[in-house]
Image 1 (tube, rainbow, N blue to C red):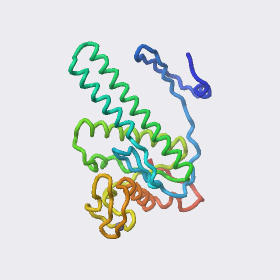
Image 2: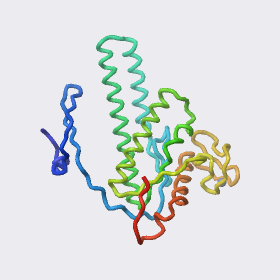
Image 3: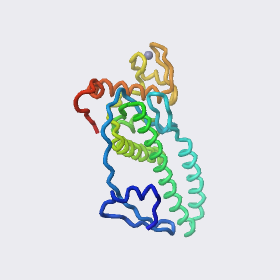
Length: 245
Ligand SMILES: [Zn+2]
């Protein structure tokens, strides 16, 4: 068994069972380790996180985690897939399989990276993470139920999973709120109107004139909702902190 220095540090945490996986001519040993969760941090504020398409995630401080690389790979894969499909040979089929595996691994890597950065940022700035409840994510999307939409839904779920367990590991509180109207509510004055959302990317309040990127506006609303629904989370430094998974 070959492992790096990093893995060696975790050897004593190894659990009883490992999986042997064969991929592209190489054997991999997947070992599961037990990591103790960190002591929960006492947050001083809420950080809303909006999940989107152009930007994989946008937080309420205005930081975006872009999906440009993901989109580039998706397009490249789609083109290659078409070529292989039209060929139809055994070799093409094998390449096709390899391609979808590579694409899934790339998505996974991207989601890991985005989740890691978001959690670290929340920890550094003493913020509790606020995400929208899963049920309404799809209905908020303007894309139709195409292959692309399916892929995004799958990717969203994965990113959420990663965020939940990485937050728990890092001791960063994470909570879910009802996302209804977060995209059409002005994060500045609270005015709700569908027409506030000018386009996929643009938010402009009809009442107070506040303008910002639609993803950022939604993320700010999520942060506010976290504050309204869980005021106890930051209210006092005394007593136990509640985790709402
Ligand atoms: Zn407004």
